[in-house]
Amino acid sequence: MALVVQKYGGTSVGTVEKIKAVAKKVIDYHKEGNKMVVVLSAMAGRTDGLIRLARQICSDPDPRELDVLLATGEQESVALFSMAVKDMGLEAQSMLGFQVAIHTDHIFGRAKINQVETERIMKALNDNKIVAIAGFQGLDAYGDITTLGRGGSDTTAVALAAALKADVCEIFKDDVEGVYTTNPEVCPKAKKLEMISYEEMLEMASLGAKVLEIRAVEFAMKYNVPVYVRSTFSDKRGTMVVAETKDMEKVLVSGVAYSKNESRVTIRKVPDRPGVASRIFEPIFESGIVVDMIVQNTSEDGLTDITFTVPKADFYRTMKLVTEVAQEIGAEKVMGDEDIAKVSIVGVGMRTHAGVANRMFAALAAENINIMMISTSEIKISVVIQEKYLELAVRILHKAFGLDDETRTEE
Ligand code: ADP
Ligand code: ASP
Ligand code: MG
Image: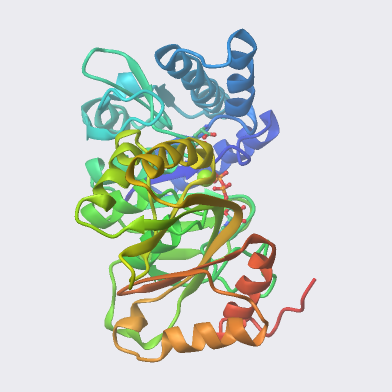
């Protein structure tokens, strides 16, 4: 008998019919002798709808009240799911974050899970019930409802699987059958991976692949939870996210990730003296803006150029902060560019193989795509390019590293 945690996203439970179909599927697993814990998202579009509703009241809703509101999306889906299971003759019990309890810090809207209690779930499982848990929500130390940030139900599922020491955490998707070498929506020749290491999955997620939430992968890696990403609507084999094996290093590049959520800020002719970088970046860090790549050119005349990237949503705020500092320190000017994107190649094989960067740059050069910035780590290389070339760049790199599935044709 296995303890299985399954997570179904918003589209998988998007209608009453789909909720019934998921209930039927879970019942089949239960009948095979598995203890079933099911984490659900809100029905498709519900969370967006609730946010819109809040914004009709005011443009910047109170974060505590917004979390109380958003948590109702998942409350609805777990209740309907449990009714469906019961209607099919089995026992089920829904639980909200605070009932479990899933303890978080008290940052509304992007709370972090600290600890998950297992007693109530274990009791229900031992009573032969199917347990349905509301994803994306928790409880802070003051007894308030918190939410984990958009897409947070993946994290709920993996955190629960870790706490319950589940045999597997299965994440069901509607649009894809697993983790692919790149987003199949952008590159029709993307291949489904049988296996990917936690580390590669973490890089892929951090670099923009939306298939799994970053924090879910972090939990899985920390607690060694085997995560199986697969399709809601078919029994086809999905992708196992697991600890790295020796074989994985044989593959040079496992995937191509991309992000359009980038913008670039350049400060020209900054006096090159100690303390300048700290003056520029301190106000940015203090406002909670996450700076990604930073490049500083060497200077001959005591002046230097500093270029860095921030998320598009923070662009205007960053430009304002930087313009103020630039004046104070006597820099020549500040320039900004929102039409950029980042494309990255990821693979543990890079640790042991040379020439990967060269092949990447050459492939882009052959298509006349200009590289604006480069950053590397042990298992990834990222470049910043003009946004209009992004999809082309993804396809070129996918082909250049032998990832194309030749059995598929371009659509
Ligand atoms: P849900 O939250 O309902 O489970 P998502 O919206 O998170 O589903 O679905 C995953 C999405 O991630 C898909 O629409 C797919 O296009 C996109 N995606 C991006 N990169 C990848 C990748 N490398 N492999 C698979 N899907 C990817
Ligand atoms: N319902 C939440 C959202 O749409 C959480 C989730 O689906 O994972 O972001
Ligand atoms: Mg998701």
